[in-house]
Image: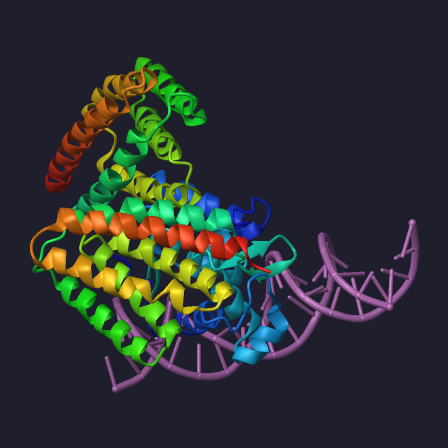
Length: 217
Length: 217
DNA sequence: GCATATTTGTCCGTATGTATA
DNA sequence: CTATACATACGGACAAATATG
């Protein structure tokens, strides 16, 4: 669609770096991002950093307050609720119309295997990332650049929310097997059954996330 | 969701102005947007204009090429196809779960009436805008800030595509009555029937747009 | 294919306004 | 209420990439 994921270009590079810091938890939600300090830290000019802020603001990872600057976005329960509403609307139809020999199926399988490997090391953060990749691959089944783009932003916001919760085992481990079951149904040519599993996954996952958020300090 | 629709702020204002020029057809698809000329024309500095470019690039209205600058995005038949795929996935579920006394229903009615008024003047461009507003209101039924945000960008891209086609009567007029029918089904508490009408609307509308594109000079 | 003009990418310095301690 | 820190916006500079003759 667009040539905007220009991997060369200092602004895009720095946007990627800052995005990683935010969803990786190195920068906490609500934290202020002062232009002067951060631009020096990144080794770029304030003008360049401001362009970075515009990109990440559009991604929902930053909040821009008038004359006050940029802050890391702070997910709330309303955020979680909205995200899961979107996930239902996007993932379920994408999976339902999924074709067993689509390229994205290989991505789904790779994601499940990566999650299983990380489980062996009890690395729940990596398990969480692999599970996200699984759902990104589901969306890729729809072959829609715009939907893919949209969902990438949703995923980034989810990772930000997870970062707020730490990465406890019970928030990620149970879904490895469920994802595998979804994948198998799809490969068997039963996408409707796969979609049913996905639907129940989304329900339990949302509920668990919401209670985790409610019990936050 | 975010404080990013900051109406104060020169960048947001200028982004709005430039967005209007693009979707209004004053700037043609593929046209180059030189920083020097445009910044002087808008009365802003090059740095500020670059921030504007980042915003509109994220909206899909601009394409950024490395070391070559910004160009107005050029919709293709693939663009149209993708946009309609997204519209199906978003609008139909939104309408299906629509509640007859939702705020957005009033917006839908207002949009139909605006379209009828403009039809009396044979002002097909305004009819087209009102029809778009009708569908934006459908999405608002879902009460999802992220979905609303996403759909706004889709609408902007559609208007860009329509601009390419001029605004012939038969691309807009037939849908006024259809939109009214959809609205009435929803108000009668039959959202499923409304969604069926919407589905067939999307099919015919997409087909007509695609053929119009295929016959483009 | 070359030399030149143009344009982008990035930086710096600075003036002004706004919020906060 | 003043002082201070910060964001906003501008203009100029220059290297590097690109377009032009």
